[in-house]
Length: 259
Image (cartoon, rainbow, N blue to C red; front, side):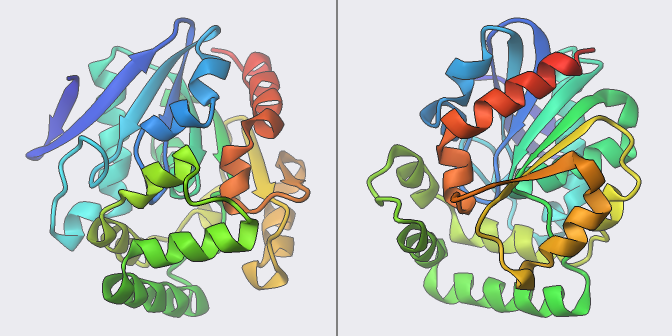
């Protein structure tokens, strides 16, 4: 089982396919199997060397209990360490939800390591902004009180996704405390919206089509310029699950930005 260890924290990763390297980074829930279950591995492995990561707290990676171990900078450095371990000096980055936000952090700190960045419904207001921070801390408290499963069930009901869907079964195994720690640590990070304004690498942002004005979608679109598009009719879960809608866009973008 391939593992790279940083500061005592083991990060599990897997390789699949052959071609130009692409990092696949999941969100605050689930593990690297999500990419297989939703069809992304099958859809990309023919042209790309896929680097699938169980980020800290998830899957077969270590689950550090300290808040400091879940700072965005730690997740960012884990990605760099995996790239080094597999001998990839440069790779495209495909991240879903929170995983996309880690992609912004990597592209900001190590622009020479990222050939292109694909944000699969991850961009949002910086959680350090007062309103966003307060909402995030309320969510953290709710997760610790009621578990990650409550949030997942609510999202599934709103988007009419059956709980027995393979991707949702994978998400349901998420450790609630690991999810809570990542959210809480993110409230100290000035990004990703701040980073978006200065990202220079080729960037594609795919936003779910059910975002409300409370999500400040207009502000995000303004900063993103022509690099963002919405997916009508898809919510946050379906933006990932319905890969028949997203993969053609992702493949076209990656083909245009190799190297």
